[in-house]
Image 1 (tube, rainbow, N blue to C red):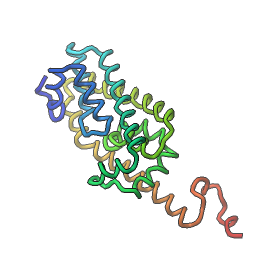
Image 2: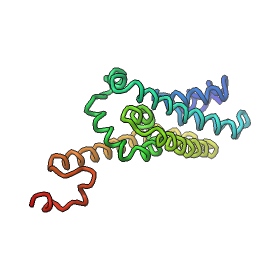
Image 3: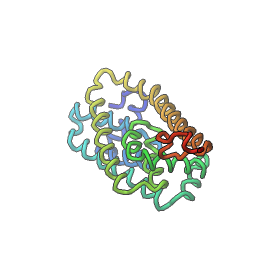
Image 4: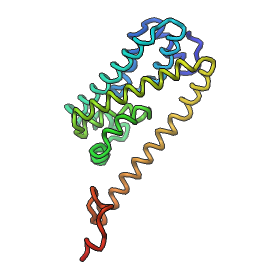
Length: 220
């Protein structure tokens, strides 16, 4: 099935040759923070379950395990490698100590939701486990969010693949054109959140419960 469009056609030969092993390896590496096409792999492997080249249940199990283990491995790299490793590996991508300072506050308050939802934003998914580990997110919270997010992520993209049929060109267009837009929107939301916290700090209001404090009470 190498006549698939775009990135799907790139992934298909590996699944042709290596089957479930290719599915597991690509998804694991993607969740380990490497830029490989995880969503396309899920879509193609799901198409193969319709044609009978692969079976649905093994695809679901293999994909879920690979997603969970890959992000756990990224978390371990972030936790035990710490900031020096993150700065060394991410310097060319703009990773700085200041950026990690801001990310730490964000993950401390919204880490669980970010790990779950972030799987659907390609840019954030590649950094999810790594940043969660660096910023010290509680291990058991991360594992639960990781497992739940992986279930939803695998289920949705597997459904997309099985329903794609003659609409695979449309799916390819959506991945190529709209995924970067979603990533940009998420980045803008994070920036807005960070700027809001910074304004509160400069005004001398406590960040955690600033919305509940009357400004007049702070200046009697």
